[in-house]
Length: 276
Image 1 (cartoon, helix red, strand yellow):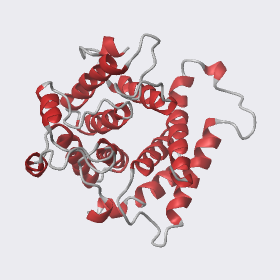
Image 2: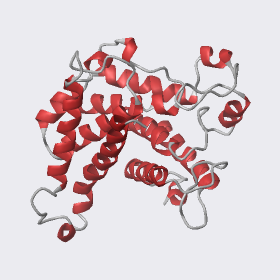
Image 3: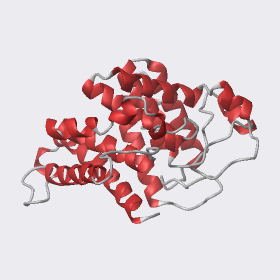
Image 4: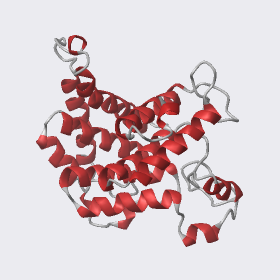
């Protein structure tokens, strides 16, 4: 991974964490107050969000002019949620404005809906809709969330021609994909631990935008399948069934995905006890 992508991955993780701290602080005020100078969640989150905006501004055109990648998507989402919980409307405005190329339908910046790392753009689009009311954000979020469970005719007809490509280059609709669909799971299921952030966010955010239970219910069903296939007796998760090591970042993906899901999962969802 190059330096910039590594920075974005670390930034995304920290922003997700600091955006959750205001919620946690209501239950533990004594532990989340009286921060030393330069260490508070607000200070750190603001610096990271401003750094990300600066990265976008340094581009020749002042914004994304190629396919938006998952590192940027997640950092963008984290920045937006942080701006919201910290009440910094100036950050919100800049972050939403930088999404203009995608919101205006400039197709060269929008990835194809053929892989969990690409479909997670729906989570960011939903957040733009939730914070700005931009209907294009809703439509984009629905597009990515729906196709994750209901592949297009083009995807189905392409089938598994050429076999499985490398991660990030698309995901074929093969015999495994068909079987996963029959089990009520996403055809993009890979049983890679990263998926439990990517899929969960695309579906969970669409639930928040639409209030349609099917999105959060199927995200929960998917997570239970991953728990059954990847979690070990010590509570940690393998990277994948055929990659038996405890990848630190991957376990972080799972922890963040579970947290985001449990924040919105209705109490009467039958999979909630298993996830808890």
